[in-house]
Image 1: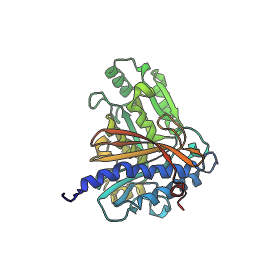
Image 2: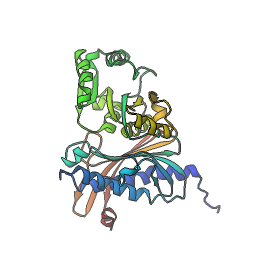
Image 3: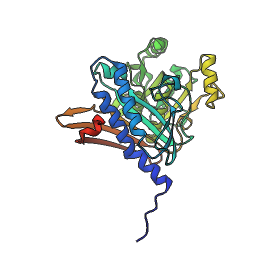
Image 4: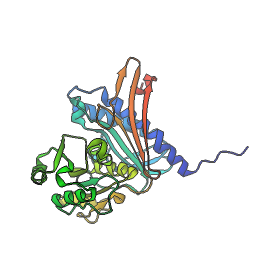
Length: 331
């Protein structure tokens, strides 16, 4: 009998599937204990602590390239933070331990724990800033949308490609004052708009299945971390996305330059946001259109997780029942 030889690619594959599920499961459970308590910071911190703890148990040399802030904002998972045991493959990590902190604090739909991991150097390395975004699902000619085109032109091009009228296109936009003009322009051409208060990652992912979600197009400004995470998921199932970092102060420009962003106005396409073999895992915290939230049922905790892998185009849904309570209490 020959010895079992495990290559680095096999190690990466194992880590980027079930191991990532465990990371987001634990972050989701930790924050779900604070659902509806009205304390956003406490819920977010619980998710951060759980995610950091689980990532540090993995046999990787991980670096956070998309995180919740800079080093001086610790104990958040900060950009540049090293994670893992230090023995294993070098990987990039993008995190949003609790997307939709307000949703969790108010026990409203759509809050998730989400992260992405990929080989080192394949996720966009940028400061925690805003990002302009546009995204659609699969099945359209390449270049059908463009971040530099007007909202009207993007809707018209998408409607033509889909074989419908512009007023039959539904666009998802975050309900923010910065989007007032965008919303007004879309409504002027009869475009249907679905507004969300939070959930930037889920918002982009909904474009991938318009026949189920009713969402054809994502437009607007959201977080850069969420943009990279959503791009990773979008690559797995097909679709198109462009993003541009909003570096609107000299300090942001200088910080981005130290991370290799030499063109502050660069328009990134999907493969530039998340390239190589990227895996994205998300676990529901509260119930939503994408995932069911955590359920506490006696001595059993129920979770639902979705995990995407770009190199294979695989999407897995994992519904789990956890009975080893000590692991979730971190005793």
